[in-house]
Amino acid sequence: MLEDILVPLIVFATGFGIVYLFLSTRNKERMALIEKGADAKMFNSGKKLSWKNFALSVGMLAIGIGLGVIVAAILGSTTSIGEEVAYPSMIFLFAGISLVLYFFLARKLNNKDE
Image (cartoon, rainbow, N blue to C red; front, side):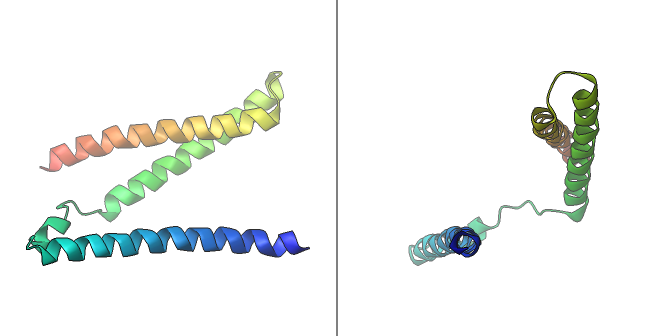
């Protein structure tokens, strides 16, 4: 009973703590650089995330996960590989392949735009 309450609470608190620590440390670092005379423009990376690239990455990831589920179902029913092995391995494999393909496609599109 107590585990049902504590586990989500600990997971949420850990996530919140990591985000808070990251943001507060980044803010302190930036304030120290500004106090020493650094230009504030150095914090702008120059590249902006466009919705086109975000949509493409999410779409390719979804396609990869879908293909992984299909291939895992085929492997689980036609071979001696158990479903408990086939599903996670194929989902991660195809999701990873889709993200690598997105990286090369996005780099090609960004070079074409410039």
